[in-house]
Length: 123
View (cartoon, rainbow, N blue to C red):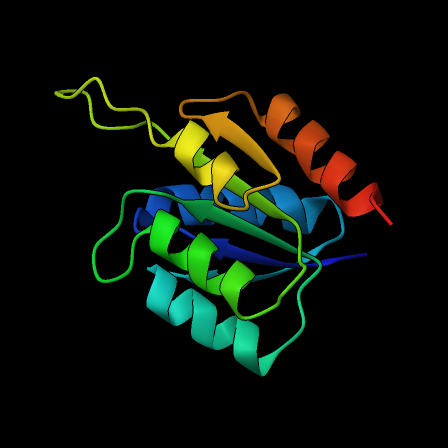
């Protein structure tokens, strides 16, 4: 159905999301950080990008800004649990910088899939 780019530094999250999306009929490409993810986006078209925000090398905010500043119009779903020790919530910042939707970790798979379906249904 759709080609989805998953960016997260947590291999368990990547595996879980890839399994769920593959079971729903989608193709997935996984990247461990934003630098790898952006390179994948340059090399292949994607229908959706799902990115974590807090990662090493190139974090999600930087990745979202780079995707938007280079003219890619792919829908972006930003996911994050934030940093428990700080009150800062990066999800509103991600939305303001170009993420189409945001989702707080931990989340229900049904809620995740609903957002994926909504974003993929956009013209």
